[in-house]
Length: 375
Image 1 (cartoon, helix red, strand yellow):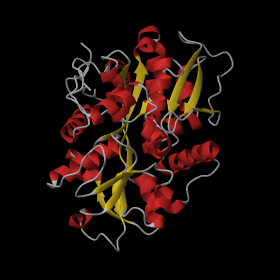
Image 2 (cartoon, rainbow, N blue to C red; image 1 turned 30 degrees about the vertical axis):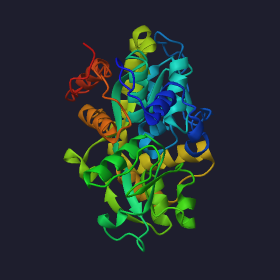
Image 3 (cartoon, one colour; image 1 turned 135 degrees about the horizontal axis):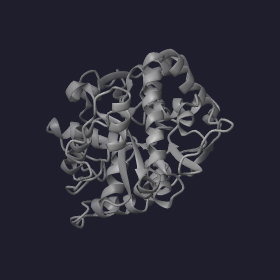
């Protein structure tokens, strides 16, 4: 799915192109939550202080998932840390259950800034020929694990011949698992998931029940789904962070529509300042931050996470201002290797100038765009 070249022939690439451009891929509607509606989030402390001065926009609309891998947005909204930096500009938040629906909202102007995984960001950027969004900051690293039924799988070699779930075709974890399979010399058809390992695309919400019923033998999934499976007797066989240099890889980015970035750079800078301050607060107050994230989840879903799920899940996720751009480029290469993506042109996907301005003011070092930034 390059920005400049049409996809090569093949049913898989045609399907993925449609999925990225129109995120209502028919075969994934039910299983993956594609096209799911955003939910209005009125849970945080995002109240404008009386007499606070507005920035160049009356309102900024943000989007994120009610997931621990979006902890910066969860905590920043819940604790009012994002709103504080916006002054008299009102923060309005919506939550999403899938990347394609959030990208759809960003492209339509329903939201201005979003927290989202690398694969949806890459797809949106390439399908729009580099016109839809920019990645303006990092948010989280890690939090992805291969968890398995210990009665059926005791070693990594035992994964061969088993049924392993990923969240959806072509998503970040699906690409990572397919790449891991290929590195072991095993063969799997990326489209069907059939081969030396059966890759079963399953919505994270139903993966624990699928595991309990025996319809899958394990899963390569983000938190807190991994810890939910452990709660049901699964064991962690592999933490994906162990496969990356310095054990760091991007799981959540901050993106903005190019239109909003051009028209309201002061608002974008304020949101980034709030994100940086939220990440610093999370690191300085980990227990309070964990409780704040769980309180936000409870308000959004009606139920918080139990301690035996929350504690290990929270521990495995690292919030970060650095978008870890080199790892996004590697993840794109993994998708190409798996046959899910034609080699993309990602130059210009990052604009880290506003973030580096915020970091400099905070006395922190600049972060790199790995050569993929705007000129």
